[in-house]
Image 1 (cartoon, rainbow, N blue to C red):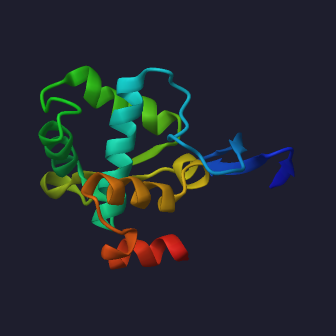
Image 2: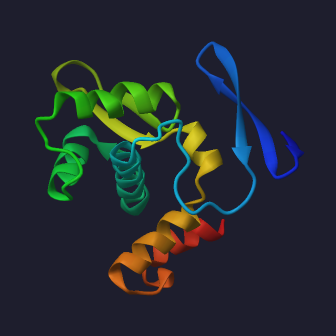
Length: 148
């Protein structure tokens, strides 16, 4: 990793290749993303927040249900599903992986390596605390993870 004028160059190993991303090395006011579409940024923020607050990878069905109930993405929106399963995973913001084999196989979402570098979990927790009008320390498990 190399830091230059408020930016850092991060090496990410993805399957059989090595990628380099440039990351802003200071506090952010909104989640960075290659997209300028505000709705897409909200969907990405919602997905990452759900995963972080759950404390573990989120089952695919639970993600669709959460995004639908939060009004970010209708459960039957095919292009929205592709946004999460293809575009955001290709951009390394989300990890979308198969767990198990055969009929018991299920897909889960987790933070991707790019999100881990670009978006501080403390930022997510602060936004949740503001939304609920509480102190971030009210979510003790998540708060501990932001301090690590």
